Length: 332
Image (cartoon, rainbow, N blue to C red; front, top):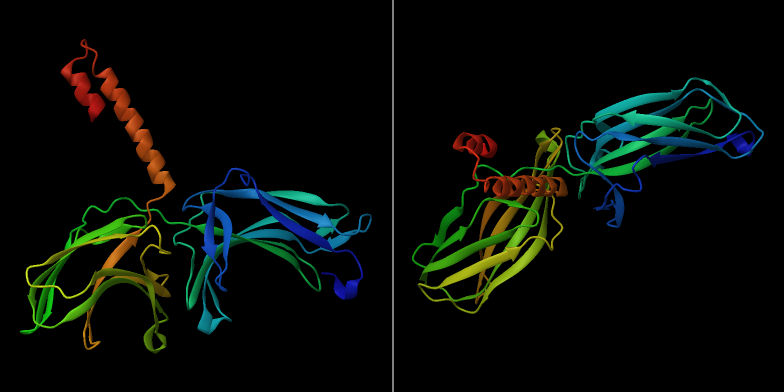
């Protein structure tokens, strides 16, 4: 860290105030390895300490200022030189001067906006991190600490079922129905497939969950399709009038919420792909987009809190002296 190994240098450490209690979440890195990072949500405060530890006690460290940044950025792998920052906050911790001993500096980024979910894909990475820097004349000393952000959603008001007919004229006519079009990440896809006309010999049928990542704009658009799950519905030949139930549990798969036009840089969409294979190995398929959303612990906690209030109301409403007006006010 020091020029030609001479002079004073330092190690930097970033410690969050709630590091002992804050939940961690698994997140996949670019090389496919999974690590655990501190988990944050939109609007939460990020606070902690920057510890600057001098390597050689007794020697002073001259610096051009000490600062910490909170950064949210998107990196497109085909354009690695350019990092697109959508959040960039800076706090100065010390003016230019010198350190004669190791020192700690407090920082706090209050109610930080974190509009997008952390994501590592085939062609793009969206990350949030803290970066502490001790400015030097020749070479800065810096340290980064990555965090993970999850975006939470409430239950969608409109969540209509999916019903479609698909077929080949005079050969095959099937109708498939899924119970809804929007699913949370731990949800269950429930549906049915009806065979209205079968004149070709089908030997196999499956449903695939396909993730489609789209990056770039205009002529530089890249699409990456990744089959997340394969679910076998049927093995053997169906007959007319048959119906086959579907029950696909999403909790066991690596899924993210649907992301549409994130900072005008990329999108992540999910599709249910119904695949039929006949005895001559011909494939027939029909795709249908679904929306995925995250229902997090915060939502569950608030729901249990509401349940506790409702139970208190139920108990208090059993008192005979309560007037109808009071009851309506409490239950509103």
